[in-house]
Length: 107
Image (cartoon, rainbow, N blue to C red):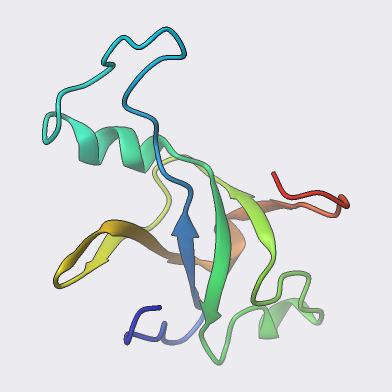
């Protein structure tokens, strides 16, 4: 869990990890090469925290902490905690979330 909290209408999403090997074992990208670009293309994650103004101008909070969401490509910016390069977060506007997962099983 991050020590940083989003401000205003921003939300903090923990991004799903990106596989660097195909199912057949082929390395898709070497560590450290164009990885930030690939991570910014990621569109799935879990909402970790919400700013105090997130969705207040919408009249209804359709996203809450813990929801699995799909968001626009390249939304927001990447955030990592010092000493924890494994966990990737994205800080984005609340309206960058385009879908909320409502199924029974985790995706």
